[in-house]
Image 1 (cartoon, rainbow, N blue to C red):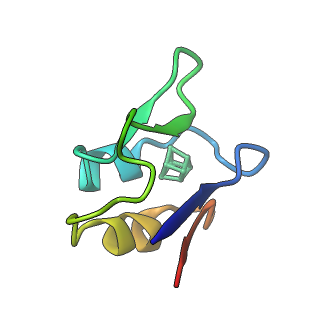
Image 2: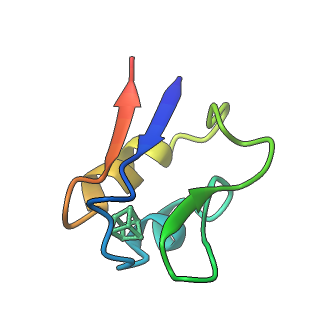
Length: 63
Ligand code: SF4
């Protein structure tokens, strides 16, 4: 799957990293980023839940 994080929308709430900590982390400024090697979120059923949990809908998951 493709995971896109819109950092212009992200407010650093951290819900993504809390929900799917094996895929998402936060950078030094608190904004969401993908863990190295986890860009496709393979094998993590929590990616879509993390996208739903984001309060500003900054995470898009496709397909
Ligand atoms: S949950 Fe949304 S707003 Fe919060 S850090 Fe993740 S992408 Fe950013």
